[in-house]
Length: 591
Image (cartoon, one colour):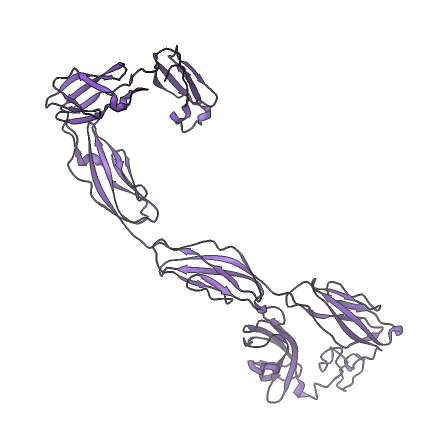
């Protein structure tokens, strides 16, 4: 340092403790007198030099929280301007016959004189040859025999300032270690993990002086293969996805001399599975082009193929997804996309929500009949292709429709006799649809199957006692006993596809048909079938036998063509033999 200089040093840069952080290390110092030293709370040491030249050795000590301590001496030299400063030139140990060079410029400092203008000289050597060239490189040539000499180097600047330093040079006849066997080439598979390549390196080295040999890695490409010496063992660690040829240099050190050996490492490639980047959940809209690029990476550069598990689209072989949704596509889909390198694959599953364009609800008007003195119940037939939540309102003073279900319930009286009209408004939150309904209120006149009379003279009265009645509202009470053709009743039909009584075009509709044999004889070879007259479908579903008085449920699947127009249809289910045939229709919606 120069006289009067203030200099700061971060002591944290010179300490390492696994268990104690830098801020918890306690620093102290001793040995200074003329040079002022201060250590602040951040472990910054500040040196303040006096105005005169002085040299002091200051000992710094670091203590951790576990009681461990370590010290280091710092030689601080204070110079006045124009003074040449020569730092300690290290002592040398040379082998007999060795030639060694030392750059003297590294050990001199002069404020006003450049390195090239410093004049160096030496004395004290005899057996050891010393030469200093014009660049101030000192070359030592050791003799063949062991010898120890003190060589004094002196540096002079252009202002007449001079400084000297003694260098102890020892020439030894100690022999370096020798590699008697090379380290064999390593041949490994990509991503091999860790292998012990050599169990005991000392078996490959000899030392004429029987010195203790230590081993270390002095050259490697640890971005390819990481070489490690643990004791006398040579370990190799793989680097993920790397393959190729590299090498490491291992050094044998007897404490004085070193000897290096290089060995090669070949890492053979293996097929790595492709890696697909995470696909975020997506949203598409009916009538608008949806596009998304799937990214899949393969470190081996293999050609990748892409596939998906959805009928909405077909992913391209570049990983591009592109399609325009239609109304029937609305919904939420869980889709898995896979990329394949021919051997291994990677997949990712994401959710695609397809929104439909908002459409007005559809409301079906019907001619309604209510009877005085009997509870009238009717549910407005309203659908929404967007599956929006519907609300219902009316303009009638006869009743108040249920706003959430669309159910109308009221009890007409004599004042209501006659014809009425009312408007039901159905709202999906965007569209309001008004539909007019005609309503006829009559005095109650019961049907044959609920009038308390034996209209068909079979000794059985009304539903359900009379099997000739299909319901209390059935006005066609007939005698099963006298009418074998009507001996089979289709009691119940249930259909389910996408939802109850709803099926997707191109999908299968599950039918459950319950039949009853209401006569006193067995019916054999009864054919059960389904018809959709509007689109020309007639398909036999099953052939069954029904014992007298028994019920039987038949379950079957009916395929709905993919090219059918979406809409409302009537599905007929028939039961027939050579002697009888019954058909019953139920509503069916195709979407």
